[in-house]
Structures are given as structure tokens and as C-alpha cells.
Amino acid sequence: MMNLKILLPSEVFLEEPVFKITAEAYNGSFTLLPRHIDFTAALVPGILSYEDEKKEENFLAVDEGLLVKSGDNVVVSTGNAAAGGSLGELEQIVDDKFKVMDEKEKQVRTATAKIEAGFIRRFLEISKNVL
Picture: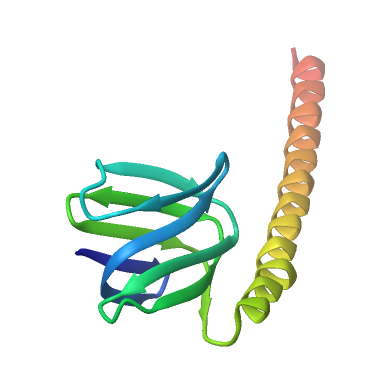
């Protein structure tokens, strides 16, 4: 058995013993079993599934994050997660909330980069005039 812990910025979202974990990284999905080698992966927004002590499969919607398996401990650190509902509802949450948030973050980064570039450009202009 492994101990799965999902961490959000403000809380421990889930902590429970599991037999199997399946998640999605940038290069595709993967499955971890108890005797799997220690492992680290950058997760993409998607569905994380795990098999609990009762051998029931559970599903969570997770945002981008990092998964680290060390021995019997698997820790997932992510910005957002959601549980409950059907698999279709969880996939809708990923599409509507997590992927939209990623697009907004890209827009903010682009705007910030433009502001920084403008600041540097003006600073260089002032430096030329002073010298």
C-alpha cells in the first residue's frame, strides 16, 4: 500500500492509503503501484484516479502540479483539486476551470513581460541621455 497525500496551497485536500494511482503528465499518463521505483512527475490539468483500501476506484480533478513518490509515500502538490460527482463532471471542471485559469495566467505573464520590457527600454533611453 501507498499513502497518497494531495496538498493545496491552503490545506491538505486528501490523505489516504491507496493501492494504485493513475495520473497524467506532459508526456502522457502513468500508473504507480506500491513497489514502483521512486518517481517525480510534473502533472497537467486532468483526472487523477486511485484505488482505495476497498479496491474502489476514485477520481479527482487536479490542476497543474507536481507528484513525488518516495518509498510508500506519494505527495501531489497542486493549486486546485475537486472531488465528487461523475467522471464527466470532473472532466468538465478540468476544462472549464483549470484550463481557463492556465490561459488567464498566460495572459498575465504576457502583460507583465510587456511592462517589464517597456520599463527596461525607458531605463536604457534615460541612461543614454544622462551619459
